[in-house]
Length: 225
Image (cartoon, rainbow, N blue to C red; front, side, top):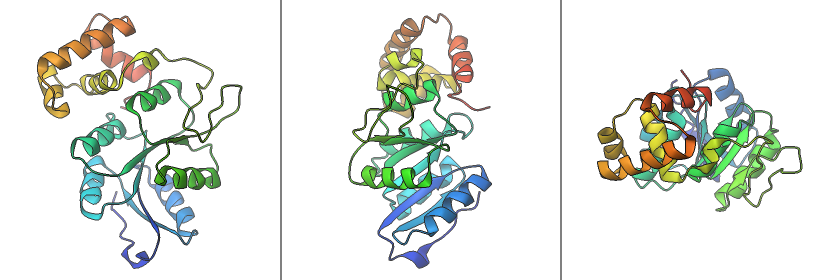
């Protein structure tokens, strides 16, 4: 997707990047933000476009669609961190999905919202994110989260909720088809450390083969094919 240059709105107080491959959703969100005088937005359709834009333009926040193929949304967060880029990363889901929510929690992202949220809720939440808070979409039920940054469980616990941040990162990279050595290079860790994380996460998830990681990631919609 071609990135939209909105440099003519340089007076806007908040600069954000929308990383959304689905054009209709991207343009709809961009149109809604345009109606607010204090938002400046740009659009990227791939992880590569997004990283170039973040490095060059330094937006305050990135809203990344979890439907990006091959775990691209989670890969973007990892790349932002590994490059030391000071930008808040917020995930956008179609609806609350327990496994994806568990992954977002483990990865300690700045926010999680869904397409079932109102734009008013999204923009209000983003303002809190830009103020340094961690904000998750609130949804009905006794476990509903709040602006304190404690997300709701969604009513169904995911086995992924038991994983640490590093274990989740390793899971996502291995599920994408990377070897332990390649995963170690991406995460700037030693192969032995990655092997240890792999062993612990497979034990927690009750898995015995590496191919089971791929099946689990696809079944839980961590990876979109």
